[in-house]
Image (cartoon, rainbow, N blue to C red; front, top):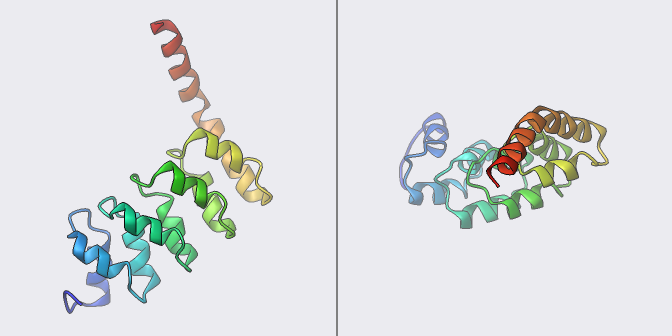
Amino acid sequence: MLFSLTAKARYLLAGNPDAPVQLLEEYAESEDAHIRARVAENPRTPLRLLIKLVHDESPEVRVNLAFNPVVTDILLAELAEDEDGDVRYALAENPAIPRAILQKLSNDENPYVAHRAERTLDRLEPIFTTVKHARFQAA
């Protein structure tokens, strides 16, 4: 272990966007799912660790990936297929998720996930319309 710290200090460091990558690598292996979840949401976490965390046994870790701004669309699409409804729900409520994934989730077998995705799409519709209109006028 790099540092001998309290659990609270490790938790805070794991989510710190200025944390050294070596520390994030160590914490991605933590037995504590809360620590791994913080690594999953950290924008500094390298892609190779995010790929590993998308398969983490803890739904909390996978939920936090849904809110990491650097997670790739491929990983988001994989999370949209997650067996845990809470993971898919987290994706469905995130307005930063690509529209295609939200549309897929709006047809989810879980009615809560489907409803949340529809609500997120409804909230984003004025943005989509504005962007589409701006592109049309620029052409």
